[in-house]
Image 1 (spheres, rainbow, N blue to C red):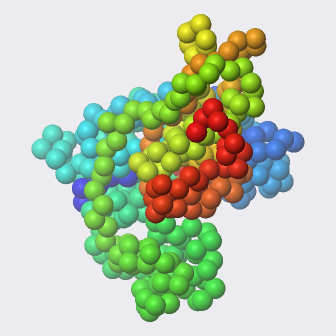
Image 2: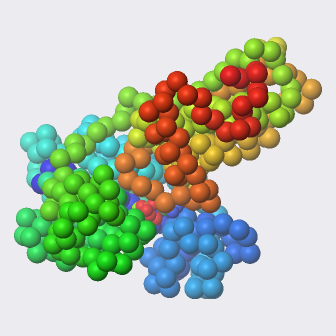
Image 3: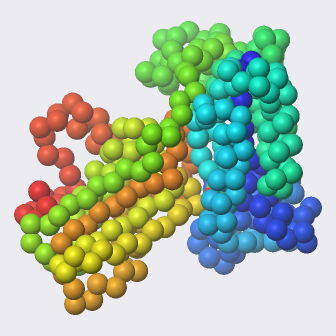
Length: 385
Ligand code: DCP
Ligand code: MG
């Protein structure tokens, strides 16, 4: 029982409730404001009773919960709270794998002589996060990552659950297939369509049939279904940021040309992030002008990203915020930082259908390294190829 999965409860909403006691016990919905386009980032457990969920269009959230208190996210504040929580986690073990702004695995195998049993460590973490930060964290304890994450998920809110061998035998098989890592709503629907609803159903089905739906992930998913998972906790301290930059062959002030360069850099950066299985929550645009002054602008996002077009969209909006009127640019760079592991498929806040496109391009480039594969808009640009 040496892996802990720690995940803050209703993170953004909890921070707002902590800072404004009049919001406590109320349905608080963080995201876009009603009447605007956009989605729910998260909501308090009080709002979840009305059926409100993350990633739901804000119009639907308003329809389900008109008495909800709608608040725009304050990413700077949440990033600060997240740092505080992660420094508490780091005081127990250096073996921390950050999965997102509010979620991490801890390998506590080497910490028992200092802090007692895994259960005790989890209790101490819960207590310290509550006392020092003022929000609740749920913790799952298990011999492996999959079961630890499942345990914290089942225990929420304010939970602490140890996934015992008895639960692997009796509880795990009865859970719906979507509880398995990597089975999203679409795959779950495909499995339901052929009568597979629970993990037990999955284990009873012939592999050739599963292969048709799960493809190359079949064996891995079957291992998880049996409660087995050999992946180690992998700390990511080494990589603090990943950047792509280019010094232009000739300085330019041409917006169209700059936009094409941003697209090229975004594609290269997206590829590197996905290769490293990382996602970035902060994107910085750096410009060096002809007179060598350097300007930069950053944006910390509501959710970590690794998609080419999302990075491009953010870099383009940062570009508009930097005043370069009448000046020429000699270097352009995009930096991604605030990195976390992307091994868990995160629902995207952005309405781009580019997931499969990026994946296909990555695969093509691996198979045909010499081929030039790029958006048509980049094909004729002599300045950047
Ligand atoms: N988030 C987001 N968009 C999503 C999902 C999450 O912006 N589609 C943000 C808001 C959340 C934070 O990330 O507060 C953490 O995500 P979680 O999935 O851990 O959700 P919560 O912490 O809000 O709730 P839970 O108690 O279920 O963990
Ligand atoms: Mg959470």
